[in-house]
Image 1 (tube, one colour):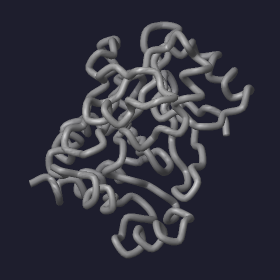
Image 2 (image 1 turned 45 degrees about the horizontal axis):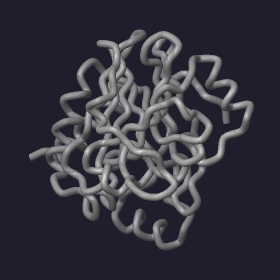
Image 3 (image 1 turned 180 degrees about the horizontal axis):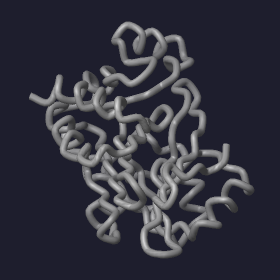
Image 4 (image 1 turned 60 degrees about the vertical axis):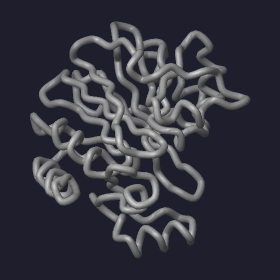
Length: 229
């Protein structure tokens, strides 16, 4: 699947890829300075044609692991873009320090223009990343794992059952597996996301299609408020 611009003029593109056992996952590319791109959650396999399509928008200067779990594509992307620097939230740095991966810099060290904000989502064991882009007619917001929009539960029988029992999929839902297993302060994450919902943004979760309708933002706000206290 090609890189699709989330909103005309936003300088933000999404590429959906499949992860074994877990299903569709979003790679998120953001124009930083003119001709420079940051790629969040890079896919483990990407065709030369899709690399070329991304390259038409700029060169990859930053590779971002949104947390320590989205790591399958990191070695290949670090090898393909050796001049790009790698970034991750502070909570993920220890887990990403291992053979086969180049070193990562704390996410706070990623230099961006004023209209692009990368922020660590504090409150989970493996880290979290929020990206807010203020270009085009509406903001675009990468919201990571707490909210998902999967069309169906994951394909693996264990995870399929877990998502069904917990009510984490399908559709726009709180990912209660993530909330229960990996969150130390789910309310803190929810409050941070609520602050970022200003301006009726288009929401891009880690898993599932981007959410564009005003009613989706309303529902997302209600879901987050239910665990924000």
